[in-house]
Image (cartoon, rainbow, N blue to C red; front, top):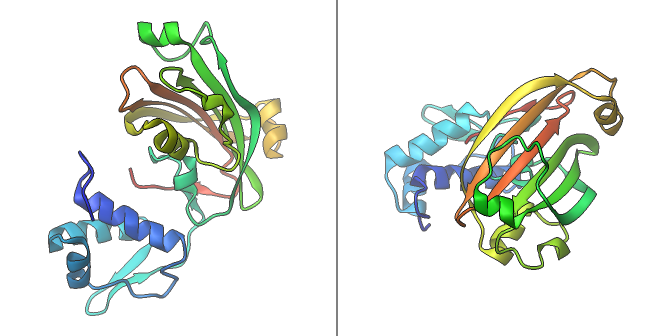
Length: 238
């Protein structure tokens, strides 16, 4: 495994093992490779492997038994939307379906935008889209996204109903998220949100605002996310 710049190796080991569990390659009750086998597989040391396994254990993905090893545990109804990798990666083993509410469109920034913009961003304008995500058939995540419209030719032509936003940015525009800030709190569901989530108005929903910095100068991703946690809890590693 090659280490990407700035990413600790234990995180890469963690993410790959987590992905294999999410995809069903390792099923409940399966025994993961031993620490020695993982060290050879990832060309790393036991402390690095142990840190990755500890993080998997802390999230409930595995149970570590002395003398036996790491056993894949019972699946949880957790959503990893706190991760900077985005909702598609965070949903993991659950079935995710996306409905585009507003197709990507170039537009000026809102007059009262909640984040401070650079002069270059203000001049370039934004690309706006909104999506409703169904998890296991339930309307669970509504997200409004603004992207700095800098060096993103033909972006509005992408099909984001079937493809991940972050993967599209990476594969077609060489844009990757490097770091970010996010604020999270509970709010009462508005009438529109309640109808969207099929819940009663004023029911509590999780609200997240995030600003993501990318590898491109002055290109930021702004996300305003609402999550119906009636059937799922929020859980992740980040």
